[in-house]
Structure formats: C-alpha cells, structure tokens
Amino acid sequence: MSRLAIQLFGVPHVEVDGTAVTIDRSKVVALLAYLAMNRGPHTRGALALLLWPDSANARVHLRGCLHRLHQALGSDAGQWLESDGDRVALRGGADCQIDVIDFCRRVEQIRRHNHAGELLCPDCRAAALEAVALYRDDLLAHLAPRDCPEFDVWLLTQREHLRQEACTVLAMLADACAAEHAWDIAIEHARHRLALDPL
Image (cartoon, rainbow, N blue to C red; front, top):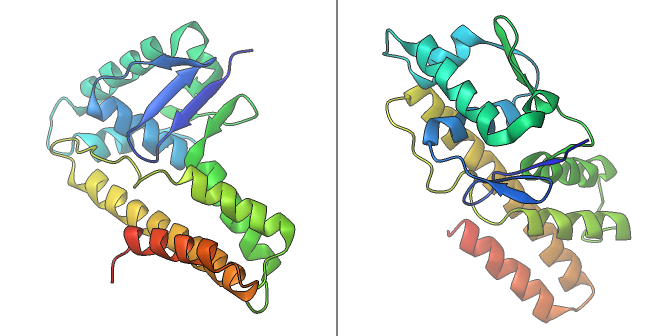
C-alpha cells in the first residue's frame, strides 16, 4: 500500500512513497487542499462553483483538474481520491498524512487537557512543540488561483484561523517556559509568535 504525504503549510508539497509529486497548476493544488481540509464527499457542482464560478465550462475544468490530480498521484490515486459519479472526496487514513490535519489534532489534544495556569503537562508540551514544527508558514503560502473569490475567502479564513492557533500554542509554550524560568526559550517562543502576528 502506497503512502501519500500532503504539506499545505508554506509552499504546497506532495509526496507519494517519499517521492515528490509535481503539481504545476494552482487550481489542482487548490482542489487537493480543499479536499484534504474538508473531509467527506463534495458534489462536482459545488467544487466547480468554488473554483470556476463564472465559467460555463466549470464542470469540464473540474474534470480536467481531477484528471491531472489522478495523473500526478500515479497508479495508486484511487487509494486516496474518490471521484465516482457526482461525488468527489479525499480518503484519509493511516496511508495519508496531511500536515494541517496533524497540526489541528495536536492543538485539539492540548485544548482537551484544559491546563490551568502556565504549566503544560509533558504530553501537551510535546504536542505543542510538534504543532509549532508543523506550522512552517501560512497555509498555502503564495498560492493565488485566479478568478475564484469564494475559494479566496475560504483560504484567507483558514489561513487566519490556523495562524491564530499557532500563536496561541506559541504563547502557551512561552508562558510554560517563563514559569520554569527558562527565559531564553520563553523569549524564543514569544519572538516566533510576534513574527507570525505582529502587533
């Protein structure tokens, strides 16, 4: 069974079994990112409207986009990409790693523990450090597909939400390090947070 890795933080990057996959069209990347972050089946009509809202040939464009995505992912594309009938979905599972999903899981793990005060338990500290390492840059940095304002709104909303989540985790790490008098590390986390979200 092949393994798919999708990196959406920073410049998008896709690998199948450790080998980089070339996806050279921004709307193919946009489609993959949207499917990766919004699990479950989507109708072809909704996806076509999202990426080609003003085109009479939106479904034709979507079909071409899906074809390119299948080609890029190779012979095992059907293992992850479901595009039967009117429904399109990206299947998750152990054979599909998505950095944004991994980041969100770690943030949720920390949130579920609901730590009082400035201290983080060892598990949450490890999860926080892993989350910060996953957040390389903004979501889909430098991706700007043309003529799809609804996708643009979705992307900007997701970017801001994920940036704020990263800032919250960095603030927790800074507070935890300060409470332990690990000033250098606390300052490093605080600076990282300010770099993501200047006042």
